[in-house]
Length: 129
Image 1 (cartoon, rainbow, N blue to C red):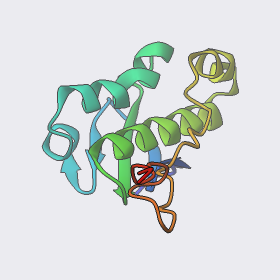
Image 2: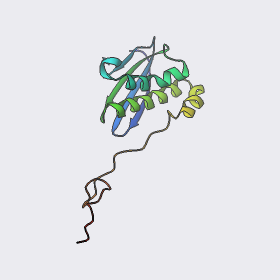
Image 3: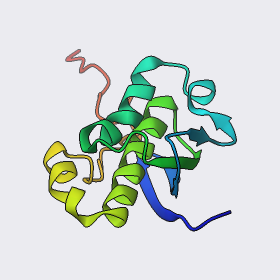
Image 4: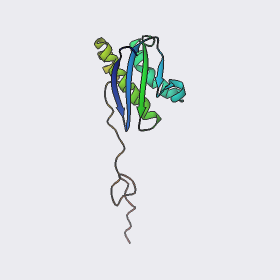
């Protein structure tokens, strides 16, 4: 294959490795076309956001390997990695992507269970007698 630009994006427990090649806008996720891997239109829209914002929809072929997490987390991990790769390809896109919040790693993850509680924070109901 030809030269590529690679970046990694993360969200919750999902990790996406994104590679940009010169091309006409084809997006492949885990060896499947994007709409074959991400069925929901919302996830597809989330992935295309950085491309639409920077006007580079038809400038690159994109190869993505994603694992871990659920569909939504994976889509956001891809968006994060794609934004980083676009900045590596053209540093002039950084202010646009930064202002949209696509370069910021969303650090929110599920909180762990604590002993004696029903969920991470919900305590059993207090009984006086």
